[in-house]
Image 1 (cartoon, chains in turn orange, yellow):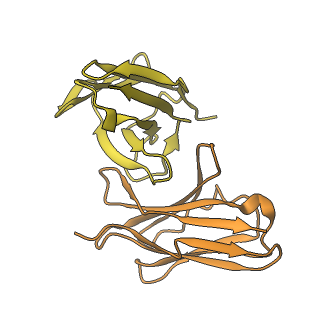
Image 2 (cartoon, rainbow over the protein chains, first blue to last red):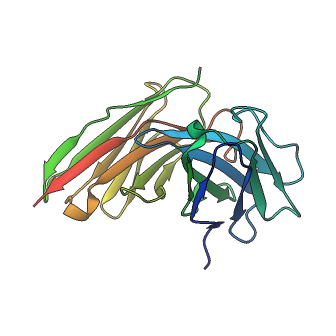
Image 3 (tube, one colour):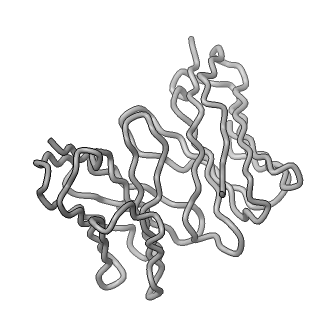
Length: 111
Length: 113
């Protein structure tokens, strides 16, 4: 079946611009997660959605980062006023309780 | 602080050998344990999960969990060059199999022919 999809696969933007990253989870998965991975670094948790519960936003690094999940399915991660340190691969994952399945990621480069 | 520790490696083994990857975690309340494989430039791929003490086997992979020692390992039998990748250990914490994952930094494995 279809896995987690993310778009765009690559994004180059200028410092100060806003970007939106999209995640389409595996159909039926109730939980959705965003992580980011900087070059040569580990996975950094950003935010977690589970059903209709309030999201766990504890990993968002600043108030420039926000995310929403509409209709319990597609999620959008928004980064406002991007900075060069935001450059990373942004990974989305979804789960039904037996492990998280990752999408291919969005590679973001802020110039 | 919920920490997951792995030897960064690199771990280098010959083709056909057993590769042993180790992980320790700090939170005694950890509930669920996962091993991911990540090829260079790719996203992590789930290869094993384990919830109970003991061994769990899936093909050439065996996950071992010892909650008393707060230790989880992954054994890869008959290692192949295609197993060369970074292996990430991840845990969830008390009361949930759906909660956020806490990842180790990964162990880089090289299998040479």
